[in-house]
Image (cartoon, rainbow, N blue to C red; front, side):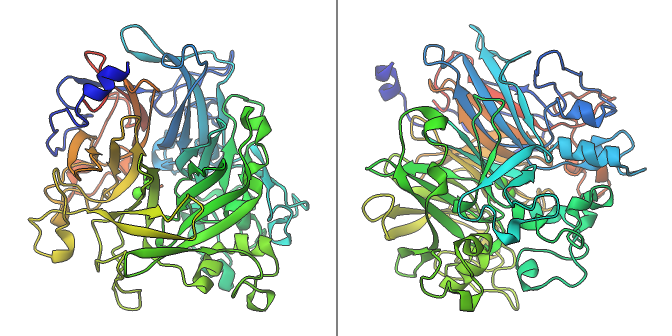
Length: 589
Ligand code: FEO
Ligand code: CA
Ligand code: CA
Ligand code: CA
């Protein structure tokens, strides 16, 4: 009850040391157990093909199983009366490692392998149940179980839907897309839906031989198809044949997890970006405000403010709420103040004469519009989280290009050249969440004071870390920070003392940061959610052993992982992890 919540110290656990073990390490008194790794059946009735440890499952099997590379996630209580023990987990599957996905890896590349890779992408919805002993299990079968893949029919809605730039030969209406791509971070709405963003979609498209200015601004190059090789068997991903297909990705996708028949919707009003997540606040008069960052070097932080107030009645009552509103991009000024610049067609430079024919084109070309408005080019904005005092936190994970020849130099918000460590910036709106201006500061600059280079020292008060990525504020007000040091940098050079990727807990009042969890080698830690009672937390371990299909780097043997199964005939698998206290107490105490 409330009394015990108030009595517990915010951070009561004993810090976990940095480490390199092939396991998930949590503090004394805590348990961490894998749940629903890649390949486990999601529990669609009577269709539950078991995972085969030699990766010989077919594409059709994969479409009924957990996808690869778990990322953002949220727990939705199923009923108000059993909210702690029965719920749905919506889980992103960011990408595939095709060397690991197929028994013979990338050899004998085929249409079946492309289809399996596409089926390993997207989102899973699974039903979970917590028993009296605290253990969590997947409920199978479940009428809620669902897979959304890179070929599931999806609608495009909002101001850009139907735009000429979104029309293709297969979809002359510009309103129906197949699939969602590279689902990274996530968000939830107050009306009970799941938001999932399409991040590095550019890597799926074979670009034109000579991309135009728009295509170049969005990362299209002729060699891009080499990463996933989908275009070799699915010409939708060949931009030389279907140039507009690329414009149909890079959107926030809304999913009602309680209705497995619902068609997911790409909400164009929030603008196009290689976006990380979508974190929702509510104005005093009940409108939705969605904060997000575009995780790419020198890209931007965005805010969408809905025109209308949220209505009671769940997803159906709010099915058009995110289609109407105003998109803004952030400018961080040197005096600790900032301003939201509207991406509104006709305002300022956003005119037809400058290449923006209408609002749809402003949204499809949100990068160019933000360039024109003079927004601040950030150090790879990743997750966003909001604390109880209305501070909005965004992790700027790193940017080694900052200050390099021909690249933007340092500025107040992005103060370090060759920024390998990253920082967490935060801002608070003047007035309500729809204010025009805000105050900002850095919550922390990540790093290690033992480093020689001033830019890699940081100012961490507590346990050291680098490359903040996932952020979540829990019900007690703890800011959880998850890291994503790249697997090639991990354990070496300026990262030498930081060990594997980790999760830390921060007290936002004191600034103290304490390490709570260390993951297996090569993985990143991502996705954070929990039951409403604060006694079960869920996180994701993504790409343990990265990249297992290229496990040949003698300089970095620590990349090896066989987590979580540790079977000699198995392979490392991304997975959700359930964290609980042995005594059933609140997580973090
Ligand atoms: Fe998918 Fe920016 O991490
Ligand atoms: Ca991320
Ligand atoms: Ca990252
Ligand atoms: Ca990732």
